[in-house]
Image 1 (cartoon, rainbow, N blue to C red):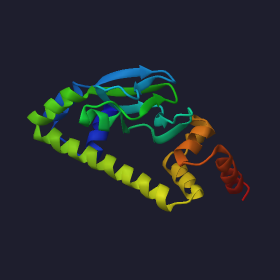
Image 2 (image 1 turned 45 degrees about the horizontal axis):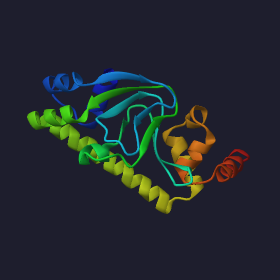
Image 3 (image 1 turned 30 degrees about the horizontal axis):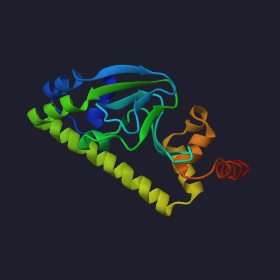
Length: 191
């Protein structure tokens, strides 16, 4: 639970009484590589804070090709948040790229707590702001940065990512082909 406490204190510290109420809702779940935390077309119940591992959000086109929208690493909030907020089926799938551990919390129970505790409501607002800024940054990166710049930014944010997941997942996240990624890596590492 230290990870959650550190997460809360980094985002928006709350009183111990509020923190204790919130912590009581979290459950530690151990997941295997390939396990799903949210499936396309299903209405989810939980959202998560990733203790360790890597989780991807992705969609699959009609030809079966997968497109990774986001990679979640340690201490990140993950899950089909849009589907939770709207209480509708998820438009993306979320699965583990590695054996992972997550802290799961039921969204409806969390929403009840928000209504009762103003400090937790402020924390929720702060978390939503962080998620919004992360998505805005991703949109900016895809619009303005070239593939090499996006790769270098990913490596800066997650220095060990290449040792954790296959190159084709990294390429998909960067919105490039594995061949393009190979060329970028060759060019960078030959200097």
